[in-house]
Length: 522
Image (cartoon, rainbow, N blue to C red; front, side, top):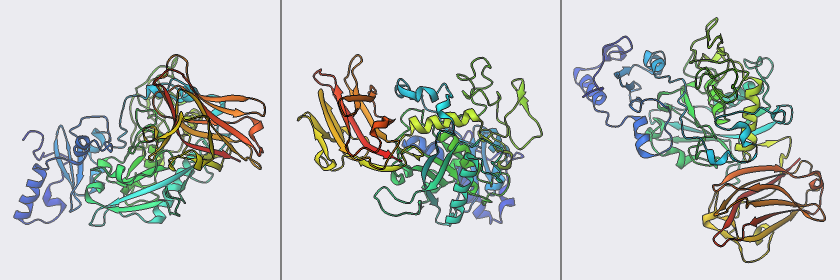
């Protein structure tokens, strides 16, 4: 069987060196190794589960067996390792770039054609001053889903989970006295969720025992995820042999879907994790959170060009150009006629060798939070919920909305999340009045889309200034997209603050949809 024989090589650990076997047990192990029908990562590709990492050869797979040994397969052959530490030190791990399995999808072009998403699009960056960390702090709720094997592998304590949250904050906020202190304070903080999607108190940690899910196989994300628009979902398991992987929000069909989130190898999760050096100080989660917030590897797309550094390479100009990943922690390394940025969290060096995001990376990831993940965070601008409606009541009246006519409906096919969403047919509008007394920096988050609209017709979000309706945002996308907009100063401390959604195409067969409306204030 091509590609499935045991290879005698420097990286192969013979069975007799892993543990004592009887000849019969050894034979069974050999048969198991030769006839693993569908290795973990291949099973995901076939199932469409959306868990699949990596962008390389689909024949690469890594599976932990019940006895704790690791079976790894790539086009050169199949290899057996005594444990994860031996595997992570192997040529297989280096050759297949298993430090990170960032999946690659087509760019979400449909969501890059309006608003400030253009400033942090898949193929370009515009690091404007409005994305400077000094503007406001973003706080992101996290839920950690721990996936375990029946033999006990994969178990992580609450304290270890909290240590990983602490490391994320040390790195993203460059906290003094920590490994991340030399870096850029991005003013992005993470905290374990205290309220679950049903409104119940929670630790922000879930635990599930399932051997397939532990080996990163099956539909575990669709079974376990919390609303990915509102929670940063992290899963811990074997991560298909990678240290971790994540989708970027600028990739097609990611935001709001069950695949959204980060997967980390449980042995590399938290401070002084079971892995041991060099990947035991929690920088895998920092690296993957960087992808989750829109950052590329520093070496992605090769050297790029100095004259077009915002549209080539990693689309950030203040990270030195780099042709490929750097491992370990060298005294120096250079490519592309400059020193490699191997202390950057988005390279592949050892955990303690990483200590920075750059200022322009900070601006790109903050733009991503603001315009690709607007329902995910609370901030210094709009941090207290004033009003929200996901239309799950099935009617407008329950949420206090006033409809213009019968063309305003609640419809299952207009749902962005849950079972129901708001729909406006042709020319009509729906209005909501609420009090913002005691609040400043009033912000409206919502998801919106239009269907069969032509020309420059749009769904409008408007605010009543006391004498007329003022348009503050609009929707032209034919697929659901998240929006976040601050209302004018007149909306602050206002006992009768009114907003409305207005559809603006009178053509038969046209309608606008919106969902998950939330109003926030300070």
